[in-house]
Image (cartoon, rainbow, N blue to C red; front, side):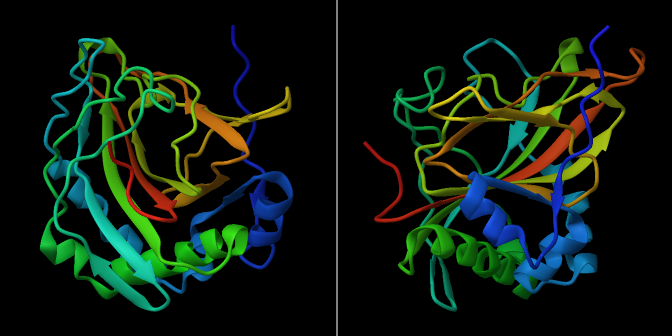
Length: 247
């Protein structure tokens, strides 16, 4: 039997950025994420029902039907947060061997969500993490609300395997785990054997990543009760200097 993954090594809001710079990754609990970004936790938790309204991902090349998602883009420059015209999501095959090299068109996040002050403050707060890593500049942000279900018996949060995203900074925010087992988070040094494994389970706890230095993945999920479908909800935010990824 596989041993349960250890609890995540949590950083406080005060030391998270130092840990991120030192190790290439940091994990924060929900209260620390809210404090780090200057957002009320109650406002983050109020978003959870929005994951019940995610369209199916039509691009899964493994034949699965376990992923639902939306996708919107923003530019954060200082205190200014501007939503970009809707555009397809694109990655090179270097960073996504399974789904790279194609334009993937997803439905945008609702305007009522992206106009919320809490949403814009979350983007600003995480931009400060990217700035700590790379210096101040405009940040091109792609937002991906995901639901991975156990439809068909198994769901794969990262069907492409351990990967980098081809950006500068990534925040993987756990929103909910309902009726599942698995979904272990794994982080590895990109150029060495050092790694870390744990399971995020607190709503709005987060993994912060220097995408230049580490690769990451999440293991498949299965229903904890085979008679009932479960799901794992996340919000992935990627920050890139110089522009959005494109052909």
